[in-house]
Image 1 (cartoon, helix red, strand yellow):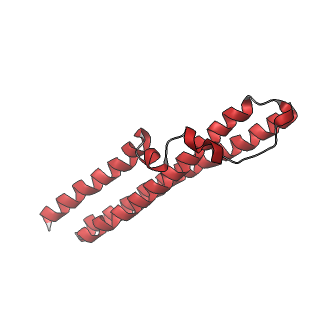
Image 2 (cartoon, helix red, strand yellow):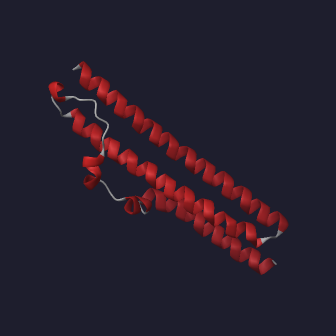
Image 3 (tube, rainbow, N blue to C red):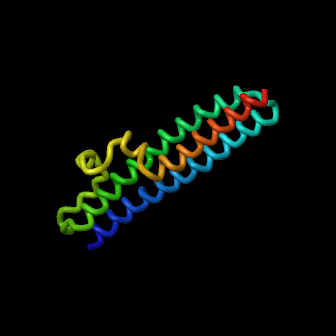
Length: 135
């Protein structure tokens, strides 16, 4: 039982790191976009608003990658959990599990990512329209 426990701990630590990375990405996205929007409002320059779209999309894509990897490792955890002790080989290969989780594009448009990053896109669009009317 000791090998199974160690293997599950390894997988669990990867899942925790991926979840932490996703959290950090969301923080960086908000910080960078807020800074660009603040610059746009201060200088009344719409170009900063348009530049803000690039990090939103880039962080959205990266966040989807981490979420997909997290789902793969959760599947791996579930598979290892039911294995017999003698077949534990400490593999961290998730390739056989790719068919069991959403694709990367499907993960991009999962409810949580779509709501978070989509809200930033909409907010940025509203600010772009407001700045266009002011200038």
